[in-house]
Length: 400
Image 1 (cartoon, rainbow, N blue to C red):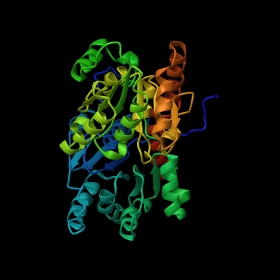
Image 2 (image 1 turned 180 degrees about the vertical axis):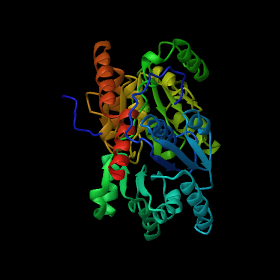
Image 3 (image 1 turned 120 degrees about the vertical axis):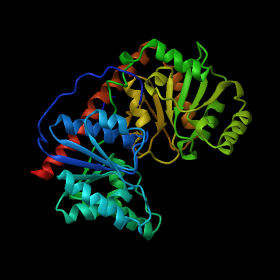
């Protein structure tokens, strides 16, 4: 099966190659607004966009309630304003909106790009009053469980351009708001392929992570890096691994150790029931994800509800690591079954176990080919550079 070319378009220490400079946004001021700047895909994407805006000759401004990534943002030359735009209390919005409007006027904003609903409710009226173009990006599943949730979601559809991070998310949005089809565009999230590259990771970094996680030598590692929440599929993965426990492996649940005591105890009980006590590690999240992925023989993304995109699958593929996920949501776009990874039937523990077995049984030659195909697929379709250039094209189209 050939690789499908139709899909559109961290933090270790690594030397990043110089990015190409352009002048598409010469003299333009782009303001991004999001709830906070802590670690996460939306936050990292915001910083990457700020860097790209500056490379394109524009001025990058970010409004948020603050967070760990403020320093990185300032180092790249962007300006940050700390305001409580993460507030979900409508009674506070008019006051915060006035502060946002002052910032937009002071920096002479040309485009306001909102990445979340509460900031959009706050900033969009201010931008409209000033005649500023507005872009929104929908990062989540956008499911309306009530008329009030639908109203709350609807603000993201009232911009001049609506970006969705996958075809799956676009489908959810258009199912509820079909009238906005002409102003929507799919821009997949991207991975920094300079950072997520085997060549950029030193042996010492991998050794450090292995020691921190108590990973023994010579045992195939099946890894699930995820937040400690049930929908990420840790439970169904443990069930699947119980079906193939006669095989040699170590299951690393990276991030599960950050969960509440009750959450971890539930996983431990299931591990004991499946007889996997000696074959599972529950660890905290790690700061050097590229090095962590170098330890994995298979990365699994068994989310029991569809991922809007699924950053883990793309990061692992960029590192040349085999990935197994369920065939739904964004995973169906970021993986090519049998070529760059495996897609199990959702949400079947039996199918998941079968796909993981196939990944573990890969011979060296086949593994090398899969690694090359997976990396090439990411470089073609899912780089942060492509994400940023596609977003800049949205800005320039509006400004023209």
